Image 1 (cartoon, chains in turn green, purple):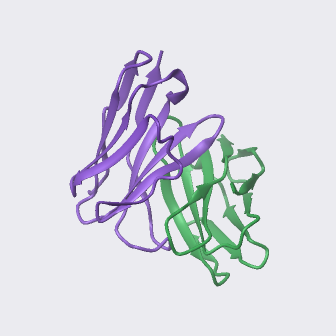
Image 2: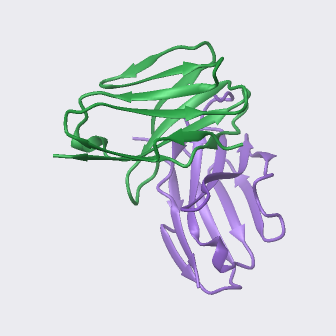
Length: 110
Length: 115
């Protein structure tokens, strides 16, 4: 089943923060986060594995709560380059059957 | 800079025609995926291979779609006959590891329009 992402869309001014959520009805082994700009391929941001770890990448970080079957992506001090659609992909086992959410469209304005 | 290469980048074809999309995986990345992306359904996994062997193609309409890896440097996705509802972006993606705890790299996609 497809994970549910929220919000569907968010508009920010440069420098503002945002949180994107991803929740699943199934137990999760891993959560993958990608960003896709219009007309381009999804680009890998980070993976979180079962164990509830929090990872960071510059000003973008994420957490994974396996008990709640949820992950959140945190974007701080947003930049214009952060604009795009963010997808979470979830796997319930160690295999590669990733199921992606429908995406969250993030727009950062000057 | 290793990357996944897909051809064609864009294809417009008439309904009923055969379409073949090709993917050159990153050297040494032995897991290959085919995804389809549409506005309505988002990103859907069609099929994936490991070491050229098909592991799962349950997401693929079997009557018209077929996926193969004739060798380690080439993966193909074929649609025969094509229909307008097949219009989508088809992504090939790779990973070098055998666990979902590892990165999947996407190609730039093949944009298919069936008229």
